[in-house]
Amino acid sequence: MNYETGGIGPGEAIAIEDGREGRPRRRRWIIVAAILLIVAALAAAAYFFRSGEAEGEAGTAAPGAAAPAGGGQIPSVTVAVPGRVTVTKVVSGTGAIAARREMPVGVAGEGGLVTRVLVEPGSWVNSGQVLATVDRSVQAQTAASLAASVRVAQADADLAQAQLERANQLVDRGFISRADIDQRTATRDAAVARVRVAQAQLQEAQARNGRLDIRAPAAGLVLTRAVEPGQIVSSGSGVLFRVAMGGQMEMRAQLSESDLARVSVGVPAEIQPVGSEETFSGEVWQVSPVIDPQTRQGIARIAVRYDRALRPGGFASARIQTGATTAPMLPESAVLNDQQGSFVYILDAENKAQRRPVTVGDVSDAGVAIASGITGTERVVLTAGAFLNPGQKVVPTLTTLKR
Image (cartoon, rainbow, N blue to C red; front, side, top):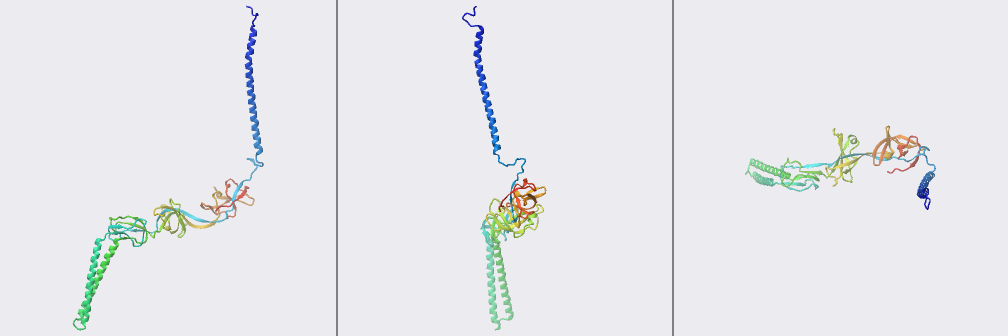
């Protein structure tokens, strides 16, 4: 075979194929290189952008700002001069509301069948007012019989008196002796005595009949009723009505032994029934002379005026004023405590914090009363005292305490 005639040699064919395959490879390498250049450019831009932000923040920082660990910046604290205020000493207690003088009402007479009940719980009654009536049909007949006996005895007495008067007119004429006069006088006196006996028996019956009605022993407020018409009652039936004399109420506040010793008769108090936002003024009228050995508590009885909101048996809280003193008053944030006791920080003339031990008095919503330790003229640190050290210099901000 002749390879030279009108053909291409083997070497030339291979060269042509290699040129065709090399062009796509060069394109791929160019694309990869371009991508790498773009990524490098983006990374460099991000690096320089972050470096610029850091420099900007450093440049805009407040001049003269103290470093976290150095510089010794002076802290600012709020201070006040508390002065002295009148502090009312208050003792708190809880207890039940009751009638100050509760009168149990029952059957005073022999009793019987109840015919009518005239009052209901919550009714106001007068002294001697009938609360319920008892059947008196038999007793009424007895009283009528005794009344007739009185009239018979009175008629006999009138007849004896008339005979005695006629005898006295005849004695001077000698028709009747003096002995007859004496006899007729005795007869008249006996008749008069029988009249008095009959009258006494009638009055006794009328009194018994009057006791059949159940009456209020004094004016007041009916608290309970335990009788109905048709009921048979007697002296052994127990309490049928309970009446609060004059409608007077009280609260029996239970106090601890130490608090009871601070309470005296006549001191004012405020009572707030459970479930009510209304308070009622009163005063202590009796302090228990004994202490319960089981609970170690005593009772202070607080008298209050009648009000519909004060229901006997209800529960209430009481605030009893036991006196008043003059002392500095501070908010609770100003008084600190540690193992050595209570203390406050005050500022001296150089605005340096100084620790001052204090004795805490009564604590109330108004604040903490300081019994001793400060006079009220000092500049007392109100807040941030827990972060101060004795002798530390501060920048004070003076404020006024709200009373």
